[in-house]
Image 1 (cartoon, one colour):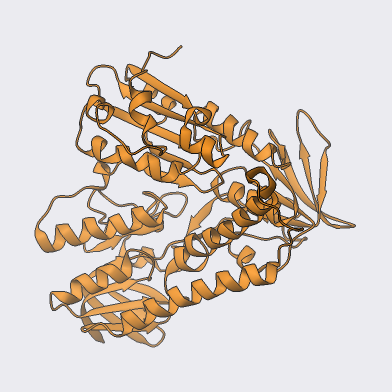
Image 2 (cartoon, rainbow, N blue to C red):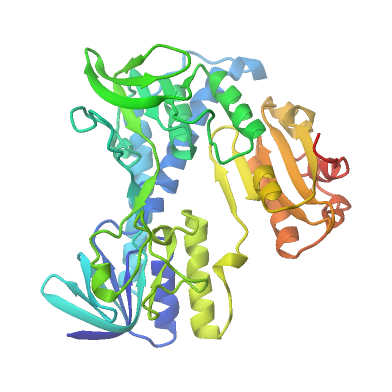
Length: 457
């Protein structure tokens, strides 16, 4: 038996940094990775998709060049070169991380599948590793729903889309939320015909209706077909490839295409870890139950990142590492519940989201004030010729504190972050409102918007 001070299973955004931090204190750490180093972000998520989104943005901008007084010839997308650029960035990040981990003092790296024997030990092949504490950072994978016909036709997921080196003639995207919409717009700009099929009555149903509608309008303006209220979905073979059978209040009952992407959520990679042997509880979806300090039902075992169901983003996984490391090594009392939700939808223009939606603020009993501003009123947006979208901010009428914000528009993913420190500091909105911002930027209009707060109409 190999004994360590800590075992870390998985090398997503939390695991490697935690390994380095623990090793710096003199602890002997075992890191176990069964696949590619870097987790979803490096291999199938942030790095590759945002790299391809950048290529799609250039293709779109090139087609619009005449609007800016620039004359170009015909625009052609070489998907093989798009993929090669993406692959090079992924490989560089993956290899750099693996080299760094293997070079850390006091860290032993194993490439194998880990399974729990008990709450202090795991097996990797014929070997058993034991430690005082174990940290699970195994991430998640695309969910493949049990739709009729799903086993009878070829389909793509957000993972297998990373292997596509051609432009599908007609891509059917099942799922009108964050992942599906990014791929839908990306491939439309690469040259595919795209249809988004969503079971709910609107896209990105977590967001406020006006934000959902604005995103809908942005995608529809690029000739992306959108089918909502799509019930009783089924996949079928078709002469050109595949088709989706559905029931909608409007539109044809079948949508034929050449390829189908299933973008209907994710599931945690927890089903093959032997969690029951360690007394580690999961919820009905397989996410590991944790307390505010990220401890599982086995107190010496922690779950970080996507597998605990508290965020599902690269930045929340990294924050999980910060919470655990600060609490264990510095005696801090940091809590997951203190984290303010912040994330983005990386369509073009992007949606930056912070804190509560209007529906959540009402649910929580706040008396709210709302500020709104169309992006067409923002000088930066007009100058760039990108005036789609809007900004929205919510304020508690009693405390004057900011409850949440949405910035859908050019640089929205950056501009929304100008409010996060005010929320963490529990500052009144007037502190932001009275601050001077750089002109011309998107952020400079946030104080103006805050000066026009009003009760909901």
